[in-house]
Length: 262
Length: 319
Picture (cartoon, each protein chain N blue to C red):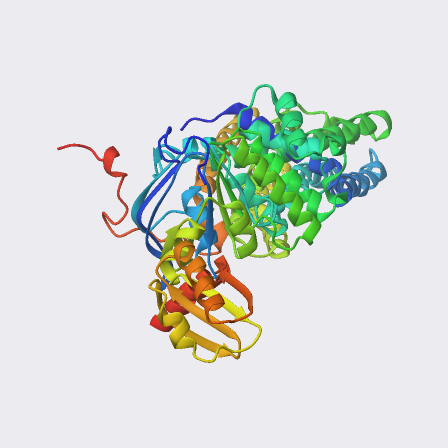
């Protein structure tokens, strides 16, 4: 499969420009992370050195989980819109008449959804850890300033965002209505968080080795998801609303001059 | 009318027994035709006749279920789909612009999809072709419907297509905007672009197209409009006199080229003739000799609408 990076870049750039002009997307990208930051932070700052270790661990775990929920929630709306939204506004068909392949189109859209999601998630994570270091109790600082936590954020934020994007796009490629696609994509992304939740609450010990193994698994899933979602992207169904009917054998034939000679 | 390069280049489109089904419904069946390079080819038919499906099929957006075709020199197949789409351009009924983006950003996006290197130059050239350079930085959503259609047309010119498919380009436009689109298509013809135009505006087809095809699931006819008229309707003369003729049979029967005649209203006659140019002077002479005051002797004109209605009525009747 040949992927033309110029076409991928063109798609991603167009998506960025569309986000800029869409107040709903910008608001979604900013408001949710603020809520996800403020709520757990208020909990962290109430903890003191007299708080039981289990309570500290639980509060820190839920904060880190919310930090990883951000890159899942932020791109879900965008991904759900990506195909069915374009179809509804009548812009998909002209794009499908150009040389862009479905793999290039989806990859460009995925990159455009991934980059802001990860940038916002990492920025808010940085704000959280710096604020904790500046003003939280030493027990909270000790619990947060652990290498595995930073590693988990660095590895899982893009990988979970990627997963959420592919799930959203898969639903978007098959949904007939944008609102349904948006609702389903948010829910469908949540199972991926289960494993991270287990790490955040230290049910699975968040060692570097475990984090790297899980990240490798997520990376493989993301790569496979790109191919699977591309296969689900049926031009004919998207344009006509009907699945492509495969021709009966030999009904569709090459042009006479192009037929292979015996 | 000769179109530029009609005989010089290979056909732009060759379609052989092409068919497309959606489950039990047949969109079109057993369609064969050829479009020469540089030709403006009209594809007419009522709603649901399969015109848009034909455009999508030849544009590799959807796959045919039978037959074969060659588009811009390439066999219609999955393997050639990307290369075919590189050589052609399609404007669907709706121009499909991103309304939050400027005209420039819309065109730049499509230039990127076509892999055009000198995109800025091409964008300006395409906008010049549709006389819209001054709207370069306008938001597409702020444009009128006619201007959006022109911007959509500019998009299709970016890749300098060998074949340009226009699917009902004047649908929903007011007469002034429609005339502007007609002038643009005329301009494309002069540049030698092959245009495949679907429409159910018969005046549009008659004015713009070198040849037309009439589709109603199956192809009813293909040809130049004057050929179709000649093929479908017998040659006839309309005669009007100030007073009804006393003995029309004696007057018209004496003219060798008149095959038959009928009178629908007093003083008005419709003559079926072998050759209108030869028969008209003879008819005038016979009328004058009979002492009639001649008001009019004219060749009966049949419009493309007459041809279209005849073909579509035949199809409906055959069902």
